[in-house]
Length: 97
Image 1 (cartoon, rainbow, N blue to C red):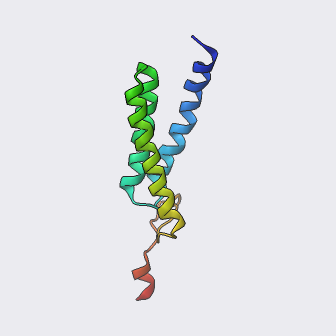
Image 2 (spheres, helix red, strand yellow):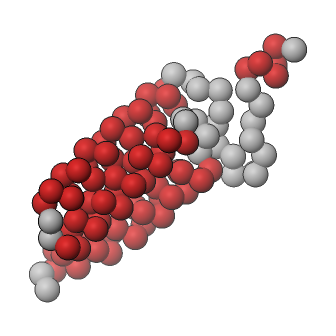
Image 3 (cartoon, rainbow, N blue to C red):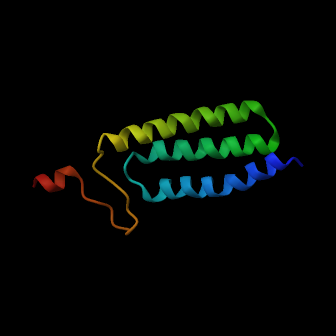
């Protein structure tokens, strides 16, 4: 096995954990966009393992779209944020009352 592939496989773990954490705790963007990015990453990892460039390409496309939409919503100051404490923040409507 090539050294580069070993490094790539090792790096898949922290990146996957980071994305899973983002999916579960980061409410700065709608859940569907965060899941799209995570599933795209899983498809890239699976495509590398099975050596299928089509799966890698589809996964990269899904990951890019999911991350773009997630970043767009976070930068637009979407009314939710990180929920590491377990409590989901109240939305704008709750503040207006």
